[in-house]
Image (cartoon, one colour):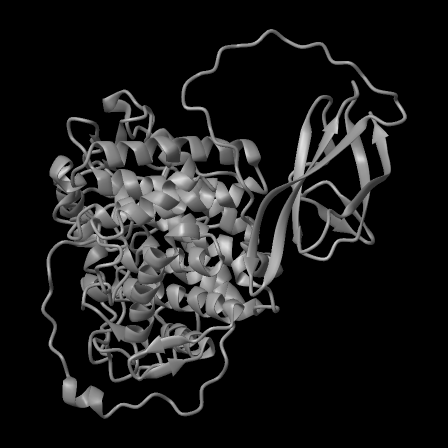
Length: 626
């Protein structure tokens, strides 16, 4: 993120004469989704994998953390610079994960779920490194001041790679809280695909929440070099609630549900009425999540307090729709407008909340009650779609603000890597100031296409100048793209009639043990008869009432009690009247989940399903011992 503000002339009278084109072609949301995910690969720091698709990038930041005696290689550059800022990076991971949690099914239908999971894991692998001790978290690598003095591709950078941390003597509750939220949200995503990794993420989330809550303070008071770029204006109260909401969602631990209730007033969750949502201000996100808990029937004795959260969520939705007492500003072309510097971050984040809230309300069969009247959830989704369509080109300038989408998109993006010839094309070193002289001031399109990047976008009058030095409008950011992924998946694949209050990828996770347990002596395994080595155990792990019906979540454990691995497993499941996760359907039978093709001796796998009646009948059709 660039610091200095450029004052641009505004041709207001000219813009007011513009109108949105009357005949607009439908957009290819699936293509936009695919391109959006490519942007995250362009933002990678560290050793790039063999399956890297953005080929003009190379390895970078390979000594990050070395001066501090810690491995901080990896993660994401936040925007057009080469600094790794922890707060917006963690928010990016939280929103990527939330997109998958809500619309992973739709992403899978688009063939992009694997790429979305890779995008999350690239971030969480780094966040794990950045959290080497329970009460230590590295929140920045690189110095924004020296970085902005230079214009170098990340493969060449000679700027400071100092690392900055928070600890009990230098707290940062907002940074630790957001990172806890990211770890918790990602643990939900990987619970289905990589349970051991999900448990590791949740362990970090528990520790980080404790760190954030116990040692309170603003992170930019400890990491002062972040103040010019990502100052925590809202403080840390919203992040504590935000983290608690995600901790409850990931762990089903009622402590965090109570935390949301006990601190609702003191931390502002039921006090602040918001018209924005983003990397700094999380209240609208908290209010939306807690409203979901209430509609799911999980609030219990806290229902009256959670109803106040929902009132604030309604306020946000009404504000965006222009149907409240205090409405969000819009451009003449209809785009939500919050500020002239990277306004698009607020558009994509608001569009995501509108989309999920629309689906929650549809599932609950409720309307949003606004001061101007009752608003059906379909209108929320339609408005979110209008914002996405604006981004993709339905605007007075007929400009797509996603690089590489459509025919008319930004060509001079404020981005060091894309604006300088690829090191693979010309390996000649680009010096700190030489980059400005040769590449920054070059009046031509970027040599590398930053496919999928959402740039800052137009001003309050729909004006936009495609100029590299116009960083307020042409600089992209990871947190612009992350919320949009879920909306694009939703618009492309459709809802399919699924009840969004059933949490399609949420599976209760075991509570991690923070202290190292005592090692118990090994137990001898006693094999069962070779004709029946696979044990099946079923139990109810959760239940709730929704619209007068009682729902049950069943957990089924398959345990291999033999001395050999089981392959080619086929299960027959009858009397199943709801959704199932954790197995792959193969015709009329079920087999192993996609992440494995065998069950080793002594190991177990779990799958879950939801319906309103007694347990389904699970039996073994066939298998192979190898």
